[in-house]
Image 1 (cartoon, rainbow, N blue to C red):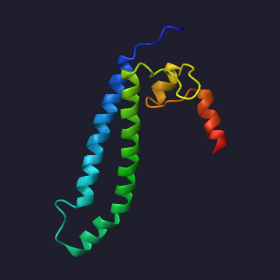
Image 2 (image 1 turned 60 degrees about the horizontal axis):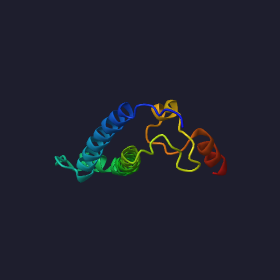
Image 3 (image 1 turned 120 degrees about the vertical axis):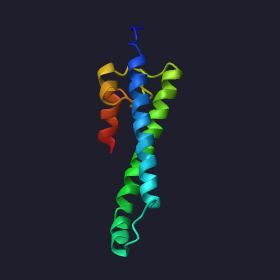
Length: 115
């Protein structure tokens, strides 16, 4: 078995991403609830037009948060560097770019080609 890289830098990166996304989701939720909304009807209409965009951003952030939480769970279980499909090692360079991926390059490419 190959020597696995140090997981700590990846864990710290994931925790920083999680903190950033959690703050973003909270800000989006606050904006959608229109806390501190203008009393001017025209401005309120304009503020509400952004709701759909904010909701979509919030949903994307929630999905990303779920993937980050799953990656942190995989770290705790000692499975972070292992592809969830084939069991091969996920290269550290791939995890640098996509710290919450669960797939090695080959399995990710196969999945891309199926879609």
